[in-house]
Amino acid sequence: MKKLIFVLLATIFVYSCNSSKTATSNTNERLENLKANDTVKIANDEIEYEIIIIEPGFNFWLASRARQRGYYSQTYLENRNYQYVIEWNQRVTQPQRFDSSLYELQIDYQPGIDYGYEVNYMLYNYFIYFQLTYKQRLGAFVPRI
Image (cartoon, rainbow, N blue to C red):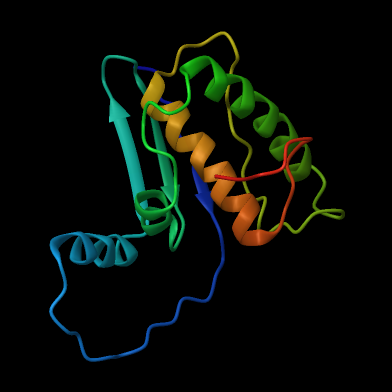
């Protein structure tokens, strides 16, 4: 079984503050739970690839700010991901120019392989989150939601 593993680590100081909780709705509780879980893993045996994203705050951002699944076509996501991956991998190989704590590992993303919608959706949204959070630009497109 082929495995494509994207492990994107960012070194961020995570802090928490204690505050009293008031009664919240189910949606707010779900979003709070996502803040605590910093790992996103999508695995699908049918397509034989998986994506693992370890990033504080990404789960919460994905649930609260990202466009819903189905908003973008798979072709759109694949095209953007391919461009972002090229730039990402170039930055990984140039630690003297780019912060090596942001660009730690290369991403093995091949344009001829169908990774499926979910993997492309998660990777695309990670790139948008990364660019907005760390004020980076991975291509000609302005990152926005």
